[in-house]
Length: 90
Image (cartoon, rainbow, N blue to C red):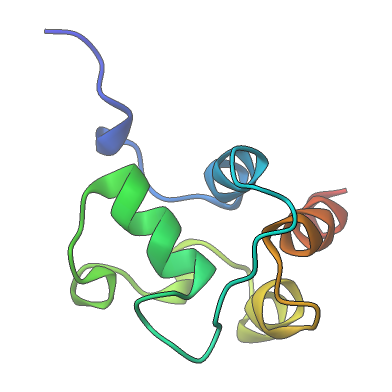
């Protein structure tokens, strides 16, 4: 059987790779669970309709503060989130 990326555990590196494929100027709504970048990533990467049923943020981020720094900080665009995520792993 061929390898399927959906078998991999969610990771910050995987989130960064997903962000790299998003339109940089496209905005997201961090307050909306259906439009939060992490939920969008998990739906795309894992195929989960309701990511919060399968996932907790410590699986992806070192701390809740790191999650907030990357996703909740303005501006809420995929390009800006990508820059912040890259800084977090540097």
